[in-house]
Length: 219
Image 1: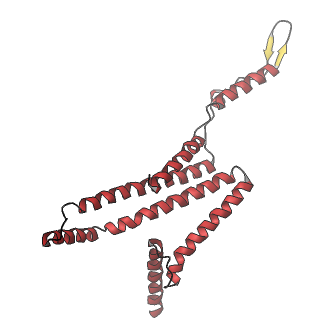
Image 2 (image 1 turned 180 degrees about the vertical axis):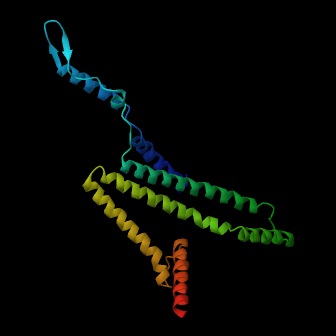
Image 3 (image 1 turned 90 degrees about the vertical axis):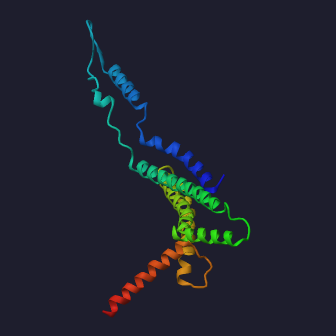
């Protein structure tokens, strides 16, 4: 099983539990009815000729109140399901790229001039259709999925227990600091070996920003 598939399986287990917080509890109407019965029993007044209750029956809106999911549950499910989509997308794209590369190897065995011409033609096609850029997107999607999952996990823990949430938040924060530092360092230090597509993207943005500032200064 690939890393993306394993991560998706873990996410699915979390999502199966978390999505239930977006639905009303099926036992809530029953509890309301039981409370109504208890209140009526407590309010009974017994006279010689009749038994009377001063408790008014509940209306249909009281028995079935409109449900609104907690804001924290909405955010947690949004983050986790977005993470699941990114993880499945990375696995799906990786599978498609593998199929493309497999098709490129068909019919190019040998060292003849015709085989070399076919290989060059297919290599030019890879560059023309930006297959390399698509390959770069795969790990970025998986890292984004991990980021969304961890943010949702921290939000969930803060709704459950402060001590556990503080510890996990500190660990997640250390991980994020390391990832940010490893991404930014290649931009400021040419000799840094922590090169990645993310670092290249930041470098391009920073360079474009510097050029814009210099162009404005020259005017």
